[in-house]
Length: 73
Image (tube, rainbow, N blue to C red; front, side, top):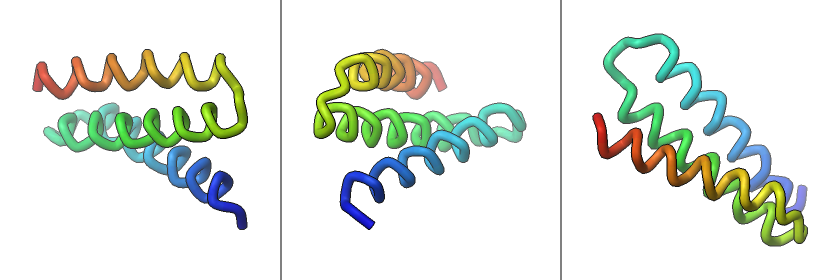
């Protein structure tokens, strides 16, 4: 498996984990936002490496909103 593919799958699982932790409302929102942030950063790397500007930009916005979420918790 290529490095980009590995980063892509890691970002996917981080996003899923983050979504579950925030949605379950079990007091782990900070950890959830951290996973979301890791996923967004991973997808930013993928978007940059494969020259997919919309993927990069979308996840840049997601990363910013996750930092806001972290700051508020």
